[in-house]
Length: 473
Image (cartoon, rainbow, N blue to C red):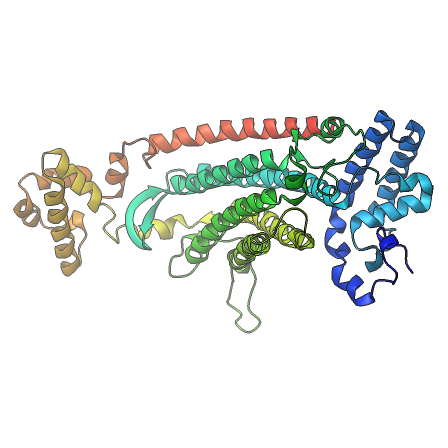
């Protein structure tokens, strides 16, 4: 009979079908660094409090370092018999150290061990995603600077609405990703709690020092309830929700740029190296990367839904169902990180088709709202001004004109001051110059926001670098 960690209770060997069904090593192998890191801190603590000797602790730590080198070099053979990454590492340690290696698992269970490794991994994953999002934000701010005074149509309901600076558009997406960064950082605070020491579910009678391990691993605090510590996967759900919103925001840009790069819009030229062609149509330049960013958002949202359904009926404390949390988390992370990096490249390499955009700005009555607001400023009730301009738009449509090219008689018939107002307010340049509210597309506002974002991103990058450097020291 193979020697499972729990084989003493059983008379017969585990069925091979059960071993294959319950094994998770192909998924959780990516936790090897974090499991070794946590095991080293645990071994050091066991030696510090005298549960094992300091020499044994030193031997265990050295053995774990050597096993880590083997994993890094790809020298470890994986086996379903050993189930997961945690038992692979422990088995390798016992093979090296014999009974000394068998002492590592003192005062812990795989329940708190798995939770600890996963929290360490998730903490690193969040830091990596935040780094990627900061890079994407920088590329969007750079795009806003490159756009200069380029004006594009702003849309509601995919219908032309009002003119906005292209820079204002890029900065809108910077705002979205800033909220994503804040959500990830907020989730990280709850990720960064140490479950190790909760053991299986009730804690341990051995005199361990959880606070020493907490400090060694850079956690902010220990989990205060052992039942909750081993069963909690809220931190996975929160992280997946934050990733789902990142992916949703990436999908929104992708959708816009797929439209913008089409012949019907012709707003944006995508870089050749980030597009593909057709196997039959020689003229095609397809935005496959953007389509896959949009499409794979469904996978990320599906991972969140997968986890929530997984958790919805679980009693306290640990249940094997929780083994399935990692596949959802890992796939979502891989997808969001790759999508973020590719969107950064797409932002850096795309260029606005300014001539084509400018040629179409007279279409769609983008200056109608500004004309209405000018009438309000001279005392017209808002609803009266709205109706008046709406009638002028209908007249212009019927005659194939713009508001600026309507006959003066038509304008004067609508309102005696409208000829003078139209001269000041109509046309894209006049309309854009009219904006004045904070947060608007007014050129001076946008220029100020670009400067603010440049400063903010520099500070955020420096703070992230400092925190990552500190956590590794």
